[in-house]
Length: 148
Image 1 (cartoon, rainbow, N blue to C red):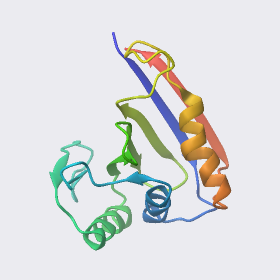
Image 2 (image 1 turned 45 degrees about the vertical axis):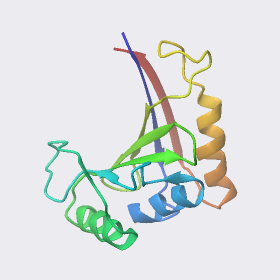
Image 3 (image 1 turned 90 degrees about the vertical axis):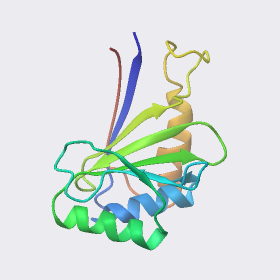
Image 4 (image 1 turned 180 degrees about the horizontal axis):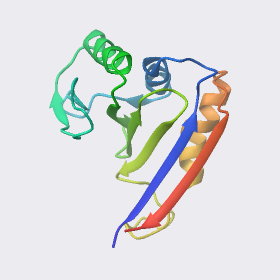
C-alpha cells in the first residue's frame, strides 16, 4: 500500500496563464530541470493519454509548449523539483482555477517512510505561504491524502 497526497489550488486572480504559475514556482525554487537537465512533461496533442516525455527543452520552448497546450484546452503536465532536494511535484492543469499538485516525487513525510503521513506543513511553507509572500492570492486550497 502506498500513500498519495495531492494539493489543489486556484490561482486565477494571480494570472490566467499557467506558465505564470510555473514561472513563480521556478522563482521559489521549484525547478523544471531534473539532475540530467531534462524536463518531464505532457506533449502537445497528448489528449489525456498521459504519455510523459523526457527531453531537454529550453525555457522558451517550455513556455511555448505550455501556452500552446493551454490555448488548445489540453492538460499541462510538468514535473518540478525543489532546489537541490530530492522532493518533487507533478503539476497538472488546464487553467489556473484548478491546479493539481501531486506530491508524488520523493514525498516528504513526517516519519521519513513511504507509508508515513505527508509533511503537509513543509509543502504549505514552500508553496502556499511563498505564493502569498509573492502576492499570488490563492482563492481555494484543498489537500487530500489517501492510501491506495
